[in-house]
Amino acid sequence: MASALVPMQLQGVIMKFPVTFPLTAVAVLVSALVLALPTQAGMDGARGARIPSAHHSPTHAGQSDAAARSEGSQGAWRGRSHAEWAQSFWRWTLSIPFNANPAIAGGDCEVNQEGPVWFLVGPLGGSFSRTCTVPVGKAILAPVAVFLSDYPCPSPPAFEPAPGQTFADFLGGGLIPLIESYSVVEARLNGRSLKPRRITTRTFGFTAAADLKAVDGCLTGSPQVGLSDGFFVTIEPLPRGDHILQLRSVSGILGMTEGTFTLKVK
Image (cartoon, rainbow, N blue to C red; front, side, top):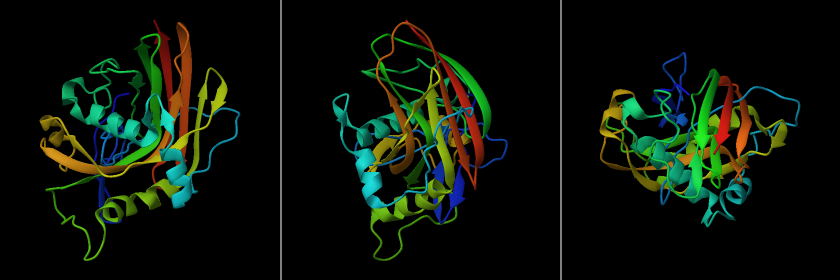
């Protein structure tokens, strides 16, 4: 996906997402970048991506109670919790310099990929298509609609917790209205419906590539913390050959995103 990192202000929270948004707003996936990208250990981040519609039952995103978020974030997958994988996704995305970043420049999906899980990322808003080569034996984590709130943000206006507010509530509270704006969050793999999982992270640390400040003034190129919330799909290793992953999301705030990944497993 050709995406760009765009800062967006919502309820006092600065968020970035992987995106190729026609507007200079919003992104995770992007941001995402849809950057969508900061993920693992300790803090949270999120970004979003979408897909062409298909005949299947959508997941409605307005279920934001703590129990539902916790259920989706926990549980072991590929040796780690889902929340830890979300953190890793963001760290991967945000660590890649501007000119090579697949969320911004539509670059090589294989850049800096390592470990048992392969990350996909695309723009937020409109339609996109991507072709990615995935090594056989790799599981896949892909954002459908994910967002990241990070700190500190040197760009004005002031971005600080209110007196008595916990840091997690400060970073995560502003993401909830955005997540709840989604009426449809859905995915299909080779025509078969997949169920997106809502994953909310704790605060975690990340360091973004220094030149990403050009697309997001809140990224400093130094250690920061973030918190991510949103919907991902997890896919077990696929057999050799071509596979089609379709993602689609509809938000009352951000509109519709439809994305198609042609996955060449070799």
